[in-house]
Image 1 (cartoon, rainbow, N blue to C red):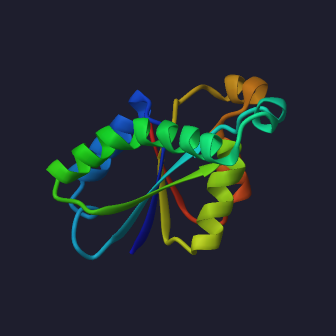
Image 2 (cartoon, rainbow, N blue to C red):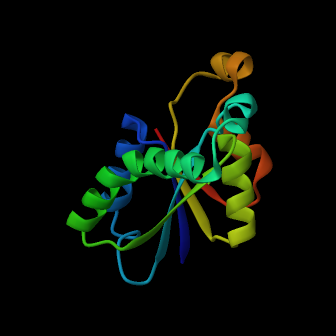
Image 3 (cartoon, rainbow, N blue to C red):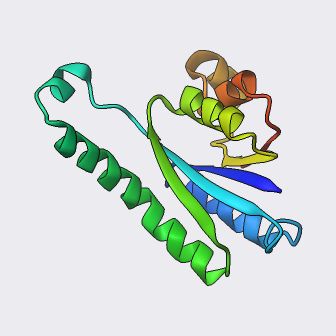
Length: 140
């Protein structure tokens, strides 16, 4: 099974990873894991005064801050994964990446706000569900 794990480095990501590794149907050699983090874009005015190498280095550093503890955790669990990051707005970027990659399942943590909060603020998980045809497992 080809599984996309969307992460943001929050406590909700940690909870989702713990859930994933605690259930016997997920860990194992039969699955192909990809860990995805979306880095918010630098505002266009700021990006315009930075050279491409500096900007790319910034994005890579920001992604690595999230990936480092996840690499360690998955390594301790004996799981191998590919790590990738994309620059963009989280929901749109995650949904597009999942569709393009033809994943069988996406797993992500959710903050678990009530429906009133989602109505007012929206949430990444809600937007991903609306934009993506890949099955999504939300862990609260």
